[in-house]
Amino acid sequence: MSSDEPDNADAYQRLASFVGQQHRQLEQEFVYEDISQDAHLAVRSHVPKRAAAIALRSFHNAQLARIRAVFNRQAQHLLVLQLLQKRMRRTAHKPGTIRVPIEADYTSSEWLEYYPQSWPNSTDTAYPSSEAMEARYEQLRADVDGLQKALELIQEKHQCYKSLRDRIVCLTDGRIEEQLLTAESPAVEELDVMGALLVQLIERVNQNKETLEMLRETHSAKKPKRTDNPHDLV
Image (cartoon, rainbow, N blue to C red; front, side):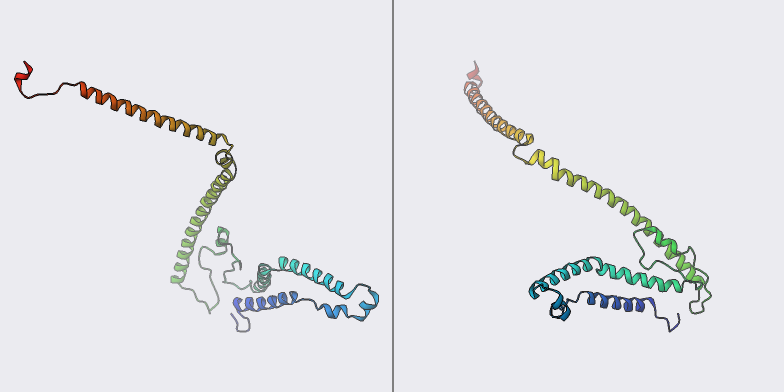
């Protein structure tokens, strides 16, 4: 790379600074006093100064909101990238270089296609190639390829989980709450009936326990006492 041509990082910073300066100028407020004191405006307009200032302030706020919505930080970033892409296209004819998108989408495997399978032959003496470099490059590309496929599999599973979550949220926000959590729902009424039956069942069990206890005591009272003296049995 020649000394008179700055690298991409420096070019990006200079363009970002320029775009940021333009953005700050767009956000500067109007000077209402200077506008309202204009001689031609005062002669041709019968609008009071205060009303004109309020109208201009309202207009400025509306325009500023629109500018901020359109020309936000993301738009600045994209603009700088577009300018930088134009600069890179002017030097894309050089042989032995690997050109990739400036803003690669690493969630997709398409960006990896910009990197060839093997290290390209370069005639630039500033970047000499070697067998070790070529082998290292092929190994790194294979590793990245494997990681990219794993990432795509994770993304596919993530989409599946999101779909399931959306369905669960839909049910939770709708049918389940409607059927189970409202006081008038059939499920709640059924639970109330079951609760009443459960109380009755507990009472019935307690009664049965008392009856069994009485029968056991009666049976114990009627049972003859055991004796160890054999003469008592004659």
